[in-house]
Amino acid sequence: MKILITSIAALALSMSALAQESSIDTSTWFDDPSTLTQTDGASIYAGVCAGCHMPNGQGAQGAGDYPALTNNSSLMATAYPISLIVHGHKAMPALGGLLDDKQVASVVNFIRTNFGNDYADNPASAELVNSMR
Image 1 (tube, helix red, strand yellow):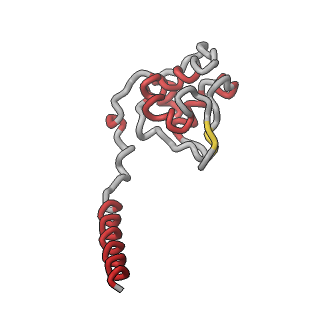
Image 2 (cartoon, helix red, strand yellow):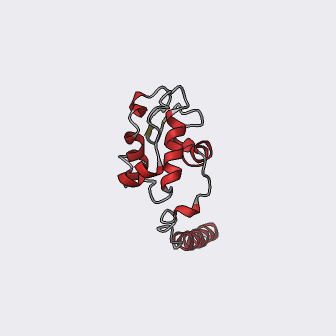
């Protein structure tokens, strides 16, 4: 009986701690682009994208399907990765609130010219990103 009471007390304390943690308002974390200070595409990719698409762009499967960016012909059209990054699609979160126009252009240009991709023509620009928001 003593073990049961101790277990119930521990459960109650942990539930209280969880309730306090969940009261943190995270809804505005991605509302201010200035919260991400990286400006070069490689750093943005490493800090934001590599967690799902993997450090070498090979993609992953597990809790979700994270497409490979390596040798990805879908990246040929500049507007495609811009739209995905800004607006999101399916499991890809919309990062338009986290990244400003220059940051989006920078990471798009990085993924289009790395990981076996050679799409340096028609690079993304802040102006193009802005027009697609």
